[in-house]
Image (cartoon, rainbow, N blue to C red; front, side, top):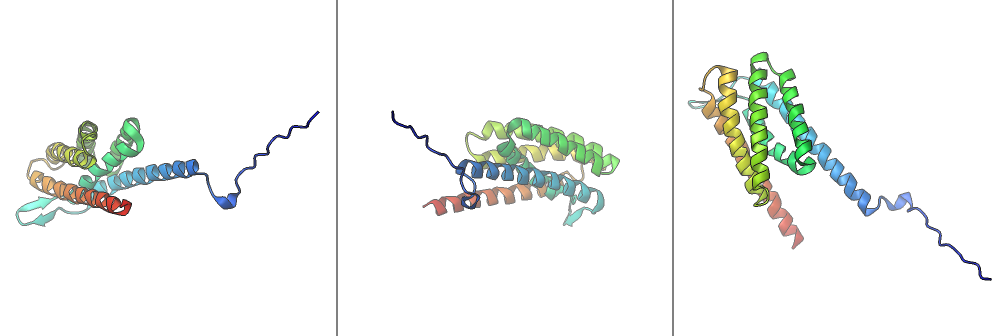
Length: 195
């Protein structure tokens, strides 16, 4: 009669660190937390500046102070789409609308919630539609659609007329170009590092 031995399996030593799958899970969780925090923080800044800081003057064009933050928000929304998927992104949009309602003056709050929700939802649909073609193209396309919708809805509701629409479009376009350039640059650096 021979004795059979069963191999002993030992847990990896804590000194060796997490397993590769665990590292990936932590990385994904970290990315999700960072993108959600950036999105929510951006909404707070956009509403605070729109309420407390006077419009910036560029010649004959007045740019409401929250505009650049709102423009950045479109790109962050696309990041949420990537990090959380469609349902998670919708939850973040709902949270963003709630924050807009709580943080701004009543007139800005109503305008912000209506413009924000409409532009974010339609921009998300554009992003999802273009995503298979190119991430950079999807970000640019969804931002351009979102900034147009947001500007045309927000300005008359918040300020009682269309005088700030050119400034809104200008500010959000600058934010879109800057974020698209950053994304394009990041992609080029990643490709160069891989070589």
